[in-house]
Length: 112
Length: 114
Image 1 (cartoon, each protein chain N blue to C red):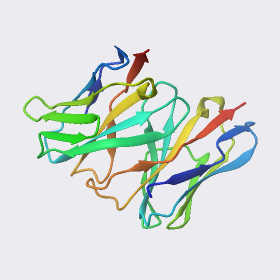
Image 2 (tube, one colour; image 1 turned 45 degrees about the horizontal axis):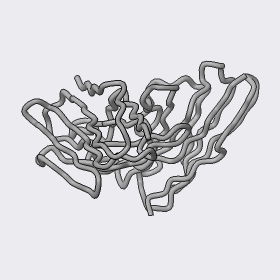
Image 3 (cartoon, rainbow over the protein chains, first blue to last red; image 1 turned 180 degrees about the vertical axis):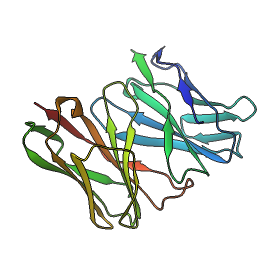
Image 4 (cartoon, rainbow over the protein chains, first blue to last red; image 1 turned 60 degrees about the vertical axis):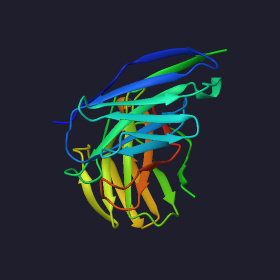
């Protein structure tokens, strides 16, 4: 079965880099997503990566995928207080339509 | 434009009330979703509509009744809810119901059942 896991909490200082980690279990073709959720708001799509890629970069965001270890990470460069939010990784696999399996979410706190 | 809109933003209702949540997208997406999210938890899928037909019902109680009147609109009708149904209700849409299609979420409706 599918299982996506994340650490619960991360605290960084403004200007530092943040790295949020996620592990998944499904080894079939898959898309992996990062969503950001601010308090009381919906989920904002940040970026995604397909399982045949190792890395994807989009401005301050870098996604790294280690297929062997089934490990996904999101690096935020020059973290700002506006980056404080809950970050969810999610997996969508080829054998389940478009069903997303979410991790439990990582709460990122950015201190000034 | 990747906007999904939801109304109302907040809703307070009693256990005997009937109310509806509305979701709209104008991206030409053919799959639409309802999720329920409790505090500090990830979203849980409730229903999926694909090409205006109900494709998935994740064993949701009948007091929640989805409706897809057209390809741009998704409703969730609520009746005789319980206090434990209080949550953030999120709508999402994707181009199609394929694992390659990204889901875009709306801002949610915060529901409180008294």
